[in-house]
Length: 250
Image (cartoon, rainbow, N blue to C red; front, top):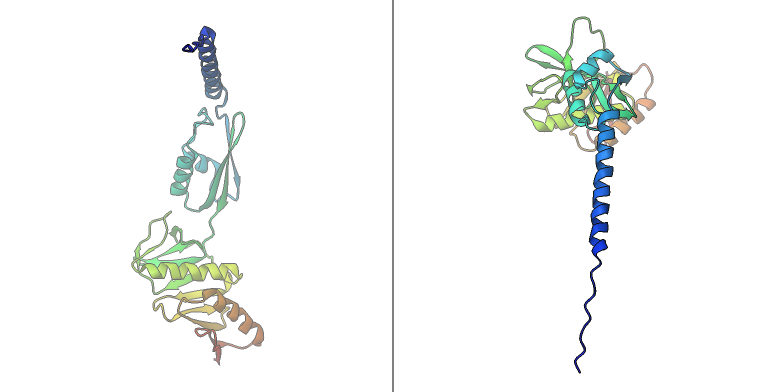
C-alpha cells in the first residue's frame, strides 16, 4: 500500500504573528525617529580649545544653527566650512552633548615659515597650510623658505609648488625640525637645488644637508655635532654625507 503523506496544517495565526512583529518594529522605529526629531534639537553651541577667532566667528563659519537636529547634522560639511573660513584653525572636532548641546573643539595653527609669492610673504604652518599674508604688525620670526616656485598661494589651502618634489622636501625638513625641537632655531631654508639643501641654524651655523635622503639621520647628526662644538664656534656643518661629517670654521 502506498503511504500517503499527511499534509501539515498551516497555522493561520503564524502569519498574523509575524505581521504583528513587523508592525511593532515599525512603530518602535517611528517612535524613535519622532523622538529624535522633536527632542534632540541644538539649543546651545560652545567653542572650546585654543581658538584664534571669536566663538561667534567659528559658529558662523560652521553654518550650524540653533534649532537644528543634533543627529541629522552633517558634521563633516560643517567642519569643512570652518577650515575654509578660518584658516588659522588646525583641528576641529564636533561633540554632541545630549540632549541639546553641541561642542566645537578647535586647536590653533602655528605659523612657522614664510614663502614669497608675487612680491608678498605668505605664512605656512608645519603641514604646509597657507595661513595668510604676513602683515606689517606681525613681528614673529619665521623660517624664510628660498628657492621654491609656488604655483599658487590660496589661503586656507596647502602649498602647491611647480616642482612637487620641493613640496615634499620642505615639509620633511619642517617635520624633522619640529620633531627634534629646533624649529625656532632654523632660518633661511634653501631648497633651490634638491641635491644641495641648506639652512641657517642658531645664528651660528650654515648646515649643508645635501639631498633629501636619510633626513632624520642627518638631523640626529646635526645635534650630535653641535653638542661637541664650543659655544663660541661658528661655521659650516656639512652632513650631506652621513659617513663623512665635516665642520668648517668661519
